Length: 232
Image 1 (cartoon, rainbow, N blue to C red):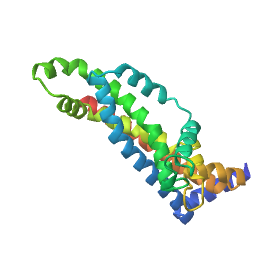
Image 2: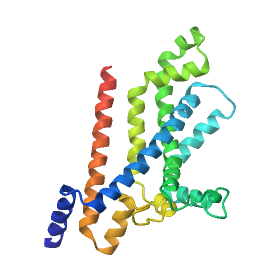
Image 3: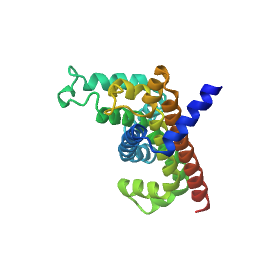
Image 4: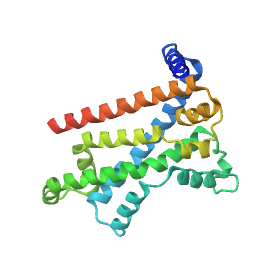
């Protein structure tokens, strides 16, 4: 117990004094996750809305595929991205493996199905209310998607936050494609695993506290936005 208390005290000190190593890891984690979430949002929101509101061949298959991919193990995603970016892979010439870009790609692949599936459900629920109006006014497909996405904006923000929460807590895929290289691809989750195995509990606890704080902030923000959307 004494060792744990001492480690916790050191962890809090590292956070309070903005330890340089800690800040570097947290900064890279946020850069990777936020970039991945932005890319997944640009892909997932229109995709989910299109599956919900438009009729096209294979629509049901796409919906089933998105739901299935929500449960993909991160290590499988990491392995697939690794094979694609490795020297013998189709994109090996780009030299992206073991870089933050590779981690962003892996996280984006994981988040897109989450954002698309949740937004599809949100838009489907909204379409019950707006379907007749959109048909009567003869709104085109692109205008329909824009209208539905705009009306569902509060719920969709919580969807994006859910994607960020998933990205920031992921370890398997980013470990495989990033390599957990110090000062290059070491993010909070991979650093926690490494520091714990090394016995460096203060750093592991400090990173864990930051990660838990981010998770709490995301959940509180999502809850507040949901209440705001309900009153709007």
